[in-house]
Length: 138
Image 1 (tube, rainbow, N blue to C red):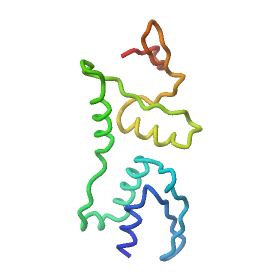
Image 2: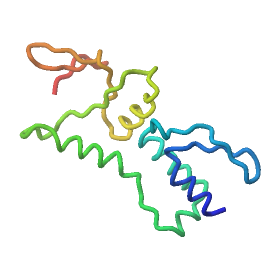
Image 3: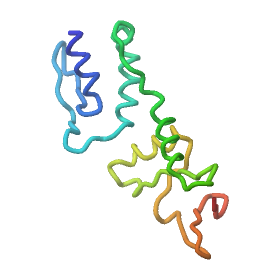
Image 4: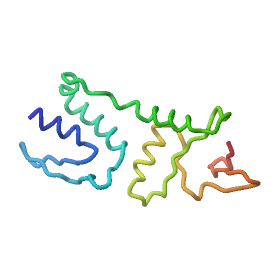
């Protein structure tokens, strides 16, 4: 049973298993063609650690919870030279996009704004972002 659970834990971001009965599982959804992204992997890891803590205490499983911090650091590192505090946002096509959860989750985890294309406008050769507090330009 342990090898089966480890297998499910390693595929959690690709396959969503559903327990049907004792020792019986169905694949509720597979994302082998279009992965849902790291948000599912991060959330699935949290769930697996809660449900099967013994697997993580006995195995050398690398942590993943620092991924959003690494992503934010990486995005900031590619800012133009001289920009000490670049403004990072996560852009989404909107709530009807199938990856909207991914976008919202990553924005929340990184502590950055979740924006849509309509949130931006150009004024005097500069890009600004509409916010609930008025236009913002960084």
